[in-house]
Image (cartoon, rainbow, N blue to C red; front, side):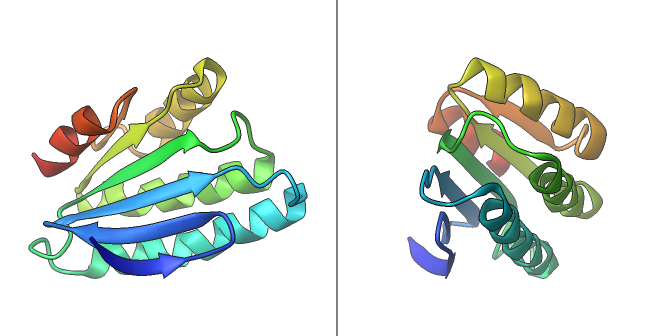
Length: 132
């Protein structure tokens, strides 16, 4: 894996034509800091979807260590992030184990990435989806 970008609660890597984003919980950060970090991620999503398909054909978005819920500012940033992938017609495989998080993700996918976004409980399935 090749490092692409890192923030206080996220890390992007690239491997074999896929981008990977892992987000983790940081209880020491308040909602405003979390929303600011989500805004940082938006720029990375935009840039990744502008790279060639050979470099990045899809995204595995791993939220298995992330908070189960988020506020409206983070929700708006998520919508924008996944919207870039929908516009670029590149698939996103979300990884989530939390039932509440999965409900919230379904709303995001339905609204911003209905054709390219899918939610999975395991990374392998998310990778298979993002590669096709």
